[in-house]
Image (cartoon, rainbow, N blue to C red):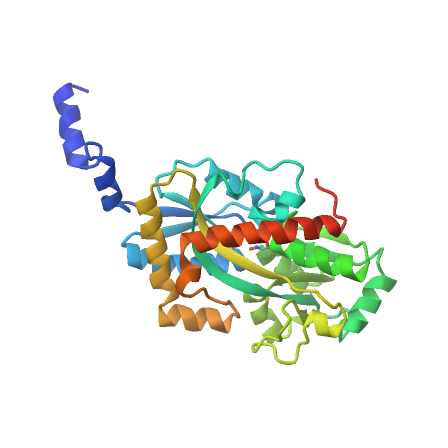
Amino acid sequence: MKRRTLLAATAASGLAAMPVASMAQAYPSKPITVVVPFAAGGPTDALARILCQRMGEALGQQLIVENVGGAGGTIGVAKVARATPDGYTIAFTHMGTLAVNIALYKSLPYDSQKDFEPVGLGGTNPMVLVTKKDLPAETFPEFQAYVKANEKKVQYGMAGIGAASHLGGLMLNSMMKVDVLEIPYKGTGPALNDLVSGQFDYMVDQAVNVLPQIKSGNIKALGVSTTKRLSQLPDVPTIDEAGLKGYEVTIWNGFFAPKGTPKDVVAKLNQALVTTLSDDKVKVRLTELAVDLPEGKETTPEALGAQLKASIDKWVPAVRAAGVKPE
Ligand code: ASP
C-alpha cells in the first residue's frame, strides 16, 4: 500500500487516528460478543439473551451471545480473560465459574478477581430440586429415603465441575450424606432435555430454566433452594423446611469485561444494563421466571466486585468443608 492510500484509509475509517478518549466515545461502533460459558438453552443463556437484547437497543449495537460450554464454564470464562480489553468481548457468567470453582479445581486458567473488570449484576436466581417424572418419590423426605436406599444406582445431572447446578447438587448430596454418580453436561439446557426423557434421576437447577417444564408436568419439583418458598411454586416446600436445615443456595449472574477494559467503556455497558433492568417488559418477564433483579446501588460495577468477593469468602470454605476434592 502506498503511503497516500494508507492515510486515506485511516481517515475513512475515522478510528485509527482518534485519540483513546474519543475512541471510547465512539464505542460501540460494532457488535459486541457476549460469551456465555454454557450451552444454549440453559439458564445462563436464557438470562443473557433477555438482557442482551435490550442492552443492544440501549447501545445502538447488537450484543451477540456466543455459547462456549465445557469444563463447568471455565473454558468460556478463560476465553474472555484472554480477549482484547476493548469492550467488544465480554462474559455473562455466574458465581459458580468465578467463586465456587476456586475450591473445585487445583488450578484455574484465570484469576477471578485480577483478570476481569466487573460490569454489573444481571440477576440472582433461586434453584429447584427437580426429578424425572417417574422417580418413585412425591415429597422431599421420600426423595431423600429413595436416594439413600439406591445410592449406587441413582444419578444426578449438572453442568460440569463448578457449575451452579454442581454447587446445588453437591451441597444437597453432602447434607443428605450420599455419594451419587454425577452426569456432567455442557449446560443444564441439554441436561434438562435428558431429565425430561428420564435419562438420569435428579438435578438442582436455576428456576429460570426449569419452571416451564415443571408447569407442564414433564418433571417434578420437590424442593426450592431458598429459605422462603417461591411465589411461582407456592406448593413446593423449601429444602430447608422439608428436612435439610440450613440448605440455601442462590446464584447471582453478571457481566464481566477483561481486565484493562477502559473505565468509560465499562460505564457505557453498565449504563445499558441499568436501563435494561429498569425496563418494565424485562422486569415482568424475569420476575415471572423468579429472577431477583438488582436495584439502585446493587447495579454498580463496584457492587458486583463486592458480591464476587463475598461469594468467594462464603463458598470456597463451604465447598471445602463439604469434602469435595479439587480436580
Ligand atoms: N449455569 C448453569 C449451571 O451452572 C448451566 C447453564 O447455564 O446451562 O448449572
